[in-house]
Image 1 (cartoon, rainbow, N blue to C red):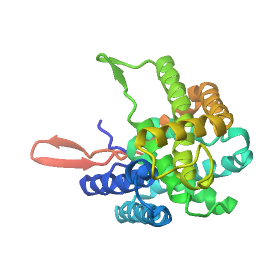
Image 2: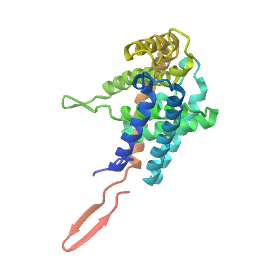
Image 3: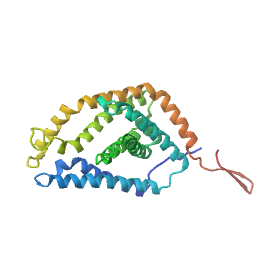
Image 4: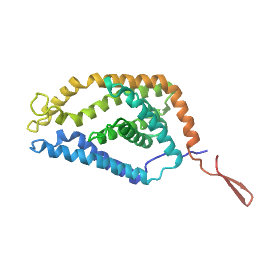
Amino acid sequence: MKTNPVFTFGTRSRVVLVITSSVSMVGFLWPFIFLGQETIPKNQWFFWVSTPLALFVMIAEISSKRLDAKSVALLGVLAAFMAALRPLGAGAGGIEPMWFILIISARVFGSSFGFVLGILAMLTSAFITGGLGPWLGYQAFAAGWIGFLAGALPHTFFGKHVTRKLEIALLALYGVVAGLLFGILMDLQFWPWALGGGTALSFDTHLDLFHNLQRFIVFHFATSMAWDIPRAVLTASLILATAPTFLHALERTKRRASFLTPIVFKAGTETITERGK
């Protein structure tokens, strides 16, 4: 009996995802692209505006798909859970327990679901904590990408199905990568204007790519590792502790939430169609 995925992007949604993600990625990387210019504030404001607009377009495209009640319920419950967990650490020392839910959920329900869940959870937590600002679009896309990549992790290696123990180890390793990646992305949008123009670590449009990249790397390791490493370790630890039970519970939910294809019985010239319940 074949089951359909809980939620997947269609062709148009994938095109919109690529376009909006590309705009957002340029918003993260513009200090290394637009060098030798004097209009730093204009560049910053352009991407501060364009990235939330790209996020809005992505949300509008997702909304146009008219998600079924089961998908909406799953997204709502998991996003609320993540949003409730995020303020517990308030970002202090990188204590952000929300990420293990995103990674495990995306593993079970797929990349499309993980992307939408990451965006929705980040937006919800921002409204709860009052964390609204030009950085929100960057945070939402970063969370969406982390969820998307978690759902894309392989289920087979060399033609063999991944065992449960290997799957949990893979998710924990990805949790470390995701925790560090989120810190790098947040520093990319923060670094160009954080220090002004008068320090040895400041972004300087007159320098070439190599020297600005060198400054960013030093800035990142000097200011963020105290947050990024605890975030990565906590995420991996929570995955190792909860994944056996959490994966089983979500997989059971997926089986119940997925739609079943019609079952057709043929008896002589009569055809009886019954939908799986």
